[in-house]
Amino acid sequence: MAEHEDTHSENDAHSEDGEHPRGFPILPGWTGSVTALDPRATPGFDGGKKDGRRRLEELDEPVDDLQERLYASSRSGNGAGRSVLLVVQGMDTSGKGGVMRHVVGSVDPQGVEITAFKAPTDEEKQHDFLWRIRPHAPQPGMIGVFDRSHYEDVLIHRVHGWADEEEIQGRYRAINDFERELTESGTVVVKVMLHISAQEQGERLLERLERADKHWKYNPGDVDERAHWPAYMEAYDRALAATSTEHAPWTVVPADRKWYARIAVQQLLMDALTRIDPQWPDADFDVAEEIQRLRGTMQ
Image: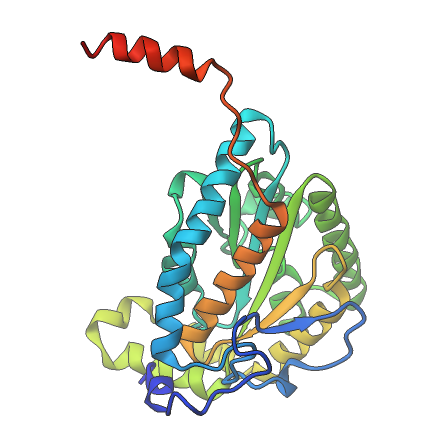
C-alpha cells in the first residue's frame, strides 16, 4: 500500500529545471498554505523513481566527502564553529525514518548526532521548552539532526490547545531568537517539512496494519490524530509563516513519493555543506620528515 506512489509513470513528474530537487522554499513573509502545495509534486526534478534512486546513490559520496571535510576542519581549528542543523518535521508516516536511513545514514556516523524528541519528561516540563533542545545543538564539525524538534511545541500544542495564543506567539519569537543564535555561531540551519497527503498517510498506516513485520511501527493514536488533520495543516501554516526567516528558512518537501523526499533533503543537506565549503586541514607536522621516518621503520 505505502509504495503506491511508485506505480505511476516516471513521466508524470515535471519541474522547471529538472536537475536540483529542493522542494518548495518558504520565503520570509510567506502568507500561503501548505494545502496549496502538491504533496506528489517533484519540484526541481524531471526524472522518475529510478532516476531518483540513481541520483541518491550518486550523491552519497559527494555528501560524505563534504561531511568528512567539515568534521576534519573543525578538529584542526580551520573550520572552527561551523556545523549544520537539519530539522525534519512532518506528520506520522511522512518519511522521517527513511530520510534518516537513506540520507543521513550515508555519512560517517561519528560526525552526526540524531536526536528524536519525544514527549517531555517531568523534569523537562519544569523548564522552558527550549531547555531540552539546546544541549543537542550541533558542536563544531557536526551535523545535528532533529527528528521532530522544538516545533512540536507550536504544532501539537496549538492543535490540542495545550498552550494559548499568547504563549504560542512567544514561542515563535523564542524559536527565531534561538535559531539566530545558532546561525551567528556558525551553524547552517536547514528546516524541512515533509508534506504528505492525508490519503497517502492512510495508505501507509493501512500497510502497517496489513503486514506483521510493520505492526511495531503502528500506533493507534495515529488514527486519532488524523481527525485533527485540518488543524495540523493550519498549525504548520502559522508556524512556517512565523519562523521562516532569512537566517533559517523553511522548505516544504513533497513526501507522497518517498524517493523524491529523500533526494530533496539530500540536495538541501549538500547545499548547506557546500555553503560552508569545509577544507581539509593543513598538516601540523613536517610531512616530508614523517615520510622519511616512516620509511626508516619499513626497511
